[in-house]
Length: 75
Image (cartoon, rainbow, N blue to C red):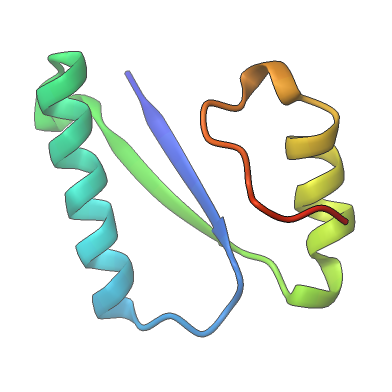
């Protein structure tokens, strides 16, 4: 049962988040062969000033083996 968490800066509209959630769900269903009822998508809005501490350090720098798409920036 995939649960996808998207971490992003605040400011995206509800429509943008719904559209992205739908696209992620569709791709998870097609690629991993799950039904719609098995997929959930959440959004964590993290202010830019907290990004390094709350996202970059714990999720990117400290877990490089779990990244399948690395960012083009460093902090």
